[in-house]
Image (tube, rainbow, N blue to C red; front, side):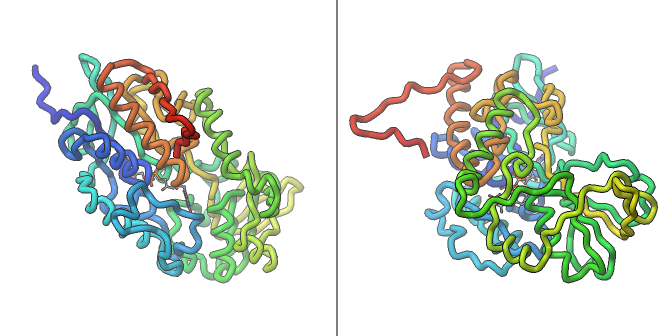
Length: 382
Ligand SMILES: Cc1cc2nc3c(=O)[nH]c(=O)nc-3n(C[C@H](O)[C@H](O)[C@H](O)COP(=O)(O)OP(=O)(O)OC[C@H]3O[C@@H](n4cnc5c(N)ncnc54)[C@H](O)[C@@H]3O)c2cc1C
């Protein structure tokens, strides 16, 4: 029986910073959105994961968000965006305008259930509604938002209070007058401690190990970004599960954190050993009463749709410069070393270039071009 599914050269799954950057670069290479390549997204609106972030997270609370490539041409840069407006609004409106300006024609809401190898070697992208699209290249840009790390501490099943992970958090007001435990040593956990402190009846910040705060002027703090990217890249190339950033590099002591320290909010409590019905039991047997536990344990790459191709975040996937070594035609944008806005942009250009090369010559892994250096040029690769 002939497969009558829609067929394109490339499908990009996800329209966050990674997917949109890839779309921009594919278009620059001469491919037509909606005809040669298709970007699909499960979310109802523009903005990627940012559309789902809680209302009290203001744009000024976000770390520096770099512009997507070409954002200045579309007159929607982040520079000067109001710091007191919810980050979800700022990012969604700008990404929406960006999609419009470049005519990226994102298809949404369209949730990809699975990606599988079809007869003849093409890739089949299956949607929740039963439809499918065939493509020679699939670029996963699905982010991490739908894959928060889950707690493994004993007792989660007996605790009678409220438990939630980062994506389930909607408002600090919901914790008014409750005894709350925030678990985690990363940026999200610290943000929750700051937001909940004025609302909760009592707040305890639990971490497994002390967080290493880096003085902003110190060499490790200056190299924080580069070091994080290096560690992520090393793990991705080796096919290991991606490491948690903060546990490996420490965290620069920003102005936000200094204010928290001065208010006494950075006093950690060592992680409890188990939850019981109404609280937590510590290693020394003492008890902390809790009404709610907010698990902010970080995220894993959301590779759910790629499981039929043997790709599982928990086991690690060998990825080099965005291409999945063991799966011809599949790229991951925004994965590992490409997770920050600035590195997503850079990675997207390489992925777009290599995807076209693969379509052209069928070689996997894609063969990088021979560098051509103009005399006197530093050959900078932005
Ligand atoms: C709480 C938090 C705060 C962060 N703050 C910052 C910050 O301040 N600055 C910074 O630079 N970085 C920050 N990051 C890191 C990173 O920039 C963001 O996570 C960013 O959203 C990642 O972009 P992305 O394009 O990779 O993924 P996302 O923004 O998550 O976009 C992925 C898209 O894929 C879609 N999708 C997923 N699965 C499917 C599917 N099966 N079918 C169809 N569509 C699918 C989703 O709907 C989503 O729109 C933060 C991360 C987190 C978790």
